[in-house]
Image (cartoon, rainbow over all chains, first blue to last red; front, side, top):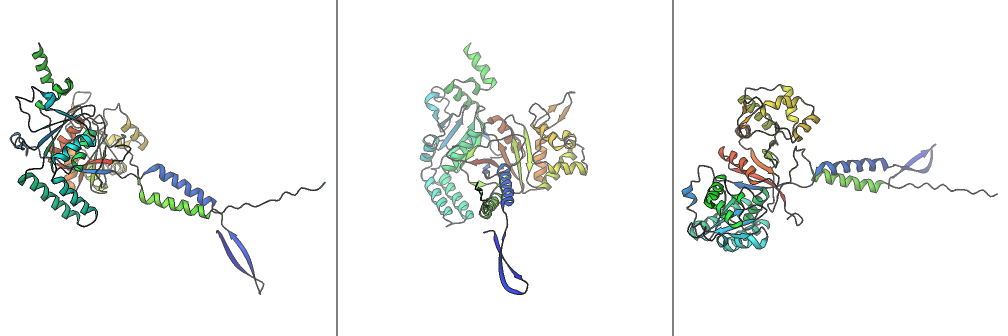
Length: 232
Length: 215
């Protein structure tokens, strides 16, 4: 392979002498190996992924507006500590919720059988439509702009006209981690949920979590003081 | 005695094929991989199913470590320099061209604005040590009122200034948050709230691709 046949003419005679010229590639291989090792150690093949997220502006959401969320379709997801997750449907009803927090606040988990099952059930009708669109996008039948446009329309209809799409509120407690938050946002993506928001946890939610788990770390200091006073 | 003739056999191994393979591998690595960014804190991003890859330009990354220390990095050199100049002006600080050059070389930075000049004077290996020193209180961009040893208030929310100046200079700049998966939510909430106060409501969370092993 690394031989070049050199034709050499000798002293006017037309006799061709074949001479093998061998190039030693060993140093070349050495150098390449060195470079490969360098690249393997100093670079990464993993390209980081990203997740787009839109937060409601601070002064846009007023408490009265938050209550406008339809009770029938609202799902509130509470992120607890130790990778625990709870949810309740509708709003906190002060007469019944606090009396029986055990059955009002339902324990769930991040597995496909947990939150995802619930969300898919609630998002039935919309999920399939969006999934069809996603398949079309994958098969390059539609462009990305068209996909966004059509998906937005479907979500809007489901939210405002047929009123079947759920509105998910994600409330992360102080004990939850960033991973929990991303996991829940992930579930929203998987289940094609159109309306979801990360909302600040309220005192009522804290109290519910405390009643459910009996972990005082969920409460604010003020609430803790009230608790100890009440016990006395 | 009969002479034993040792026949010398010239074993010449042809390395051309080997060379071909290594060159091929080398090209593969050069084309597909990206250089590991040297970050002062090791961050393990949470896994997600989202398959959008991050943009390669016009990106400002906010690196949050598990204790809430904040570091910034920019993909565009110009954004970085503009932001430093603007934030410096707010505090009446100007930077020499030499300091600017040193600043351009930094990938991820995070020191209070008043310590930037002295930080830039350090040789680069010392800078690395300085940022990685967990005990050092002067690491990370301050996000709230801090009082120094003499009881003087050493600054307000510098992080907000960095973000607002950077986005003012380059309106196309996208904001990305990169945080460790074990970071507690209040730490993230602090960053999110600061961004929200500046009406920056669209941003990117950097994640890694979910695979079967880390799901």
